[in-house]
Length: 311
Image 1 (cartoon, rainbow, N blue to C red):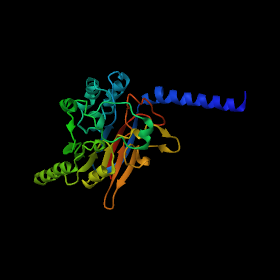
Image 2: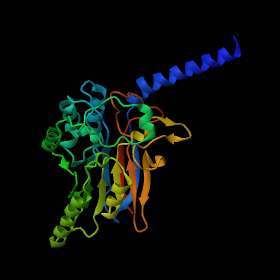
Image 3: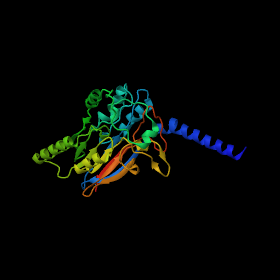
């Protein structure tokens, strides 16, 4: 065979292999990414936080539903849902079934992502790589109220532009949340007011924890929102949205974060800081993808299990 034809054949076979792997195999290889962080005061019992993000669930995805249900076996102390749970207009019953075993037995908080308001549409993948897909001009076509009510009826706490304090394994945990900045639904002033109310209530409490651990929660990790959560005093910020780049180049990493976050922070654990403060940042690569972009390469779908330990 002519060398050029031989090379073309090898490249063609490699392309078919990559396409087969990324569309049929890797996007179903769900995994748990584990981290341990020293953020609790001395002598505190460790707290296990399970973060789920970007399920983009469709009604027929039984394997994903069963895998999410199996996460209850991890027995986390806190579950944090960082948005884009819906991937189809008819996915809500399947979503609630997937989450029920976790949420009914574990304190859970959630914020929304854009795909909890808007159903999926086909988008130009090249444009996705070049710029963030900001707010759509179309009318939201998902019943976000039904999604919020369904999660709340399971026992999950709505943290969109809000704050809450929970007592977990002997520690006070304060959580600050923003609705999705990707579609500009975030309201940092409202969140700060809710956080201030927590502080006022704490001051009035006789048995208030003098050293609570603080977690910030947001779907899309835009720098302005990360700054707002950092200013609120977060020790750890949890986000999703990026899909870890979804298609990563070995040795290079993510080609896009689909927001203004540096691409090297598009997946996993890093640190977010300003001149005065610093916090751990965990960006989950999430468990799903749009039904119109069924591909993952060098970026397995994941949940994050983060153990908070004493400093």
